[in-house]
Structure formats: C-alpha cells, structure tokens
Length: 81
Length: 331
Image 1 (spheres, rainbow over the protein chains, first blue to last red):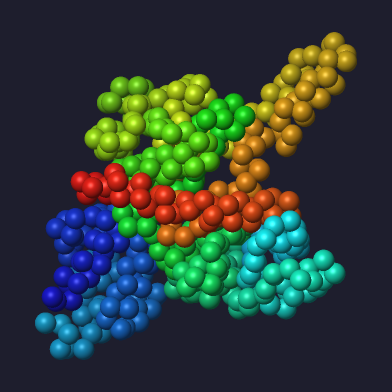
Image 2 (cartoon, each protein chain N blue to C red; image 1 turned 90 degrees about the vertical axis):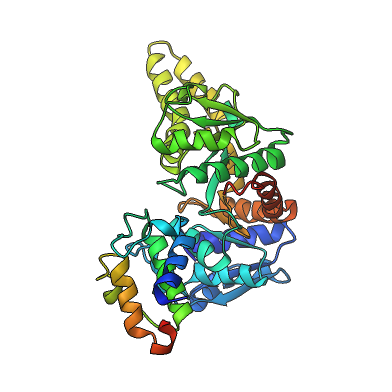
C-alpha cells in the first residue's frame, strides 16, 4: 500500500468517514474532521512512518494532498511503493 | 492536578475519601506541591493509601486541550490516563480542564470499539428522578451515529443506577414527528428506530420532566445549555416566590425555608452533586470529571462514585450492550 492509501486509511479510521470520499483536494473541513481528529491523525501518521511533523509544517497543509506530499517527502524512498 | 481550588481542596478531598473508604489514591501533579499539601494532613493520612505521582507539566487555562497529545504528553492528566491504560489505576478523576481530561482519555486510554467520542450522562434528579440525559456537554457537534452510542450509554446508566429494566429512549427535538429537527437529529431518528433499542420517538422540551422517557438523547450543545438552565431553576424560583410574597410577611421567610429544604444547594440536579461529577461514557476505562469549582466534599464523593462505577463494571456493561446493538454494524 502506498503512502497516500495508508494516510487515507488512518484519516478514515479516525474521522469515521468512508475513505472513498477523501481526495487530494479534500480539506479537513470537507471530511468534517475537528481539531482533535487532525491531531490524532498527525500522531498516527508519525507513528506509522517513524517521522516527526512539526506543528509549523502541519499548519501549512491546505488539503489532504499537501499532507500526503509532506509525508512522502520525509519517508525513505523504499517505503513509498 | 487541576481545579479552581487545586491543590488544597483536591488533596483534602482525597484524604476525606481515603478516610471513609477502602480506596487507594494516586495524586498526580507537581510532586513538591502535592507533598507540601499532603503534609498538612499527615496525622490523619498515616496508614491510608495515598501516593504521589510526579508529573512535570500541566495544561494552563489558556492552552488548547488538544495540546495534551503533541505538546504536553506528560502533563498530569495524561500521566493519570496512562496509569489507567497500564492497569496501575482502575479509574481516573479530574476536576481540571474537562477537555484535557476527555482528550487524554481518548488518546491514552482509548475508546470502546464502535464509539467515536465519549459522552456525559446525568440523572435529572428531583423533578424527573427516573430520567437521564445524554450528552450533557462532551460533544458540541455530533455525527448522527453518535446519538446511537449516547442512547446505549444512557440505557446502561438507567439500568445500573436507576434500576430500570427496559429504559424508554427518546430523541430530543423540536417536534414529535420524524421529520422534525436538524439534519443530524433526523438521521439519528432513523438509526435509533432500526436499532432494536426501546426507542419511543422524538420528545419536545416540554416532555423532559414528565417521565415519558427514561433516557433523553441530544447533542452536547443542547444538553449542556439545558443542564445549566435546569440547575438554575430552583434559585430563580426562590427569588421570584420571595418577591411575590414580600407584602405578606412572614411568607417570604417561610418560602426560603421550604426551598432550602427541597433544594439544599439551590440546585435541582442533586444527583450530579451527590456523585461529584460525571463519567465519560465510551472510554475503555472509568474516567470521572467534575466541576472545576468542586470543593473537598464533592471531590471525595467523586472518588467514591468512581470506585462504585469500577465495582459495578459500567465499562464492561456498556461494551456488552454496545455489542448487542451493533450486530448489524450500525456503529
């Protein structure tokens, strides 16, 4: 499973929305994620990929695509498959 | 360790609880501060089971409760939640930030499978002693399926604490018809109707106190506004009655006496007062939160009722009730 699908799974599990409605253009508001959902998703993604996402970076995410791109840029190449 | 009167009243309340009950208490907070406070009660705490667990951080008033997760995972309430998760403690009690306690519970203890967020359930006490309301403020914005878990939590509460065998569940709305209410309420109606619970339909505000329903389900915004309005009624009714009777002494003094007798703390919600706060239902462990303004007697009551909740197995009961109604994967 690639990075995008893994993050989509995490976000769908936490916000309890159907993952099919999450696209790269979706904002957290679109999927009715509140601040707690977002923080839980960040922690889960950090644990899954063994990375750290500083608050300053997280605050720049405009949509799901930005979130995925940031994680992809931090995850070692072999895990992106 | 939080609360408007922390650490003095919290420590005093813990000492009271330890004196009257067989309970082991861990006070989690800045060790030196808690030690100093506990030392004031040294003569009476000898031999009782009160321990101090140091926590280097705490959530300040101006901080977001969400900060508990990423910025302050070692704050006192988070440490206490982790102790429940690891089995070192059976229950968590906090009179500090309710949001921080709820978020610590969600993140560090975890939710029961199928439950999205915890809910607060409370008995309406004096005027409707066989009625509980849920959610009383833990969830301001609710998704429709949350109403279903609220109904199940309320149902378990009514069975366990009010001894009602098959509680009647109603959804609070702006009319009795299925089509009434917000989008979330109308969707929740459909879910409750097909849930297999003893759902009697919608009720309106005028039905809250008439005993029509044993469990009234609403979102936390409505529930919290109603709770605070409800708790203020006795005080306002007393003032109004005394004013109306002031031309006829000694009737105002008599009215004051009657109100004092009927509503001791000028609060109707005597159950909440007696239990010192509410349980966060849906968390996979007993978590009790109390008003920030709680004093030692309420703290002691809360600790005692948290122990009762553990003994009564409320979490296990909630889990099995949830499993019974979730066979079709509704949650």
